[in-house]
Image (cartoon, rainbow, N blue to C red; front, side, top):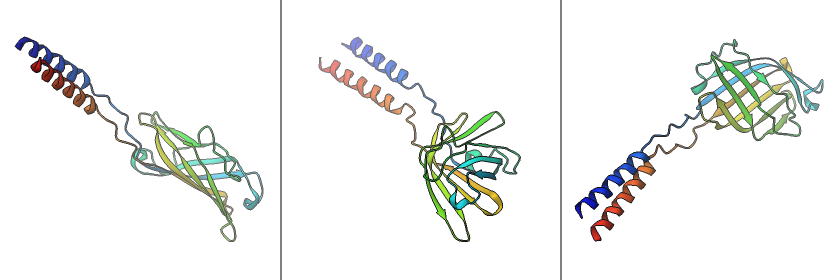
Amino acid sequence: MISKIVKVMMVGAALASMSAIKVQALPSIIGDVGFSGGYAVNSPNLATATAFTSFDTIVVNATHGSYNVVPANGTVAAAFTPFTFNPATVPAPSLWSFTFNGLTYTFTATTETSQYLGGVLNSWNIGGTGFASITGFANTPGTWTLTATQTGASFTFASTAGVGPVPDNGTTLILLGAALSGLALIKARLA
């Protein structure tokens, strides 16, 4: 009887140790990045424009959090994908991307909204949601905004990524293994 209990405990311990293998989850992106530069639209008047046809001299000008390793001094160039904003459509495949020190940074939009602000401002506020990506990080949900003005033919962009769900590091499997071992031990005692 004792040897049977010892065998059950050894099997339980083996199961618990196998389930304790730690799965390393990629970290979520936290923070935001900003850009500035020039653009061209499909109309000479921003009020009647419906799409960006190109973006010129886009550079990183603000960084926080996970983006903080990228200089925000206008030396890192970014590529933006032209897109339609009136009516709002989802830009594809990625809204923007850049590479710095071997890491690729991208943002893929999944929704878009746009609002024209007439009058003296003569500008568009465009934004939505999507997923930020950085090499070595988990794709992280975030938001994006872009403001384009008629004066100066420039724009500002910011995208913010938040913290995603906290992954389980194997604790659930350890608890399950311990519970099954305990049940086996109780069954062996009762037999």
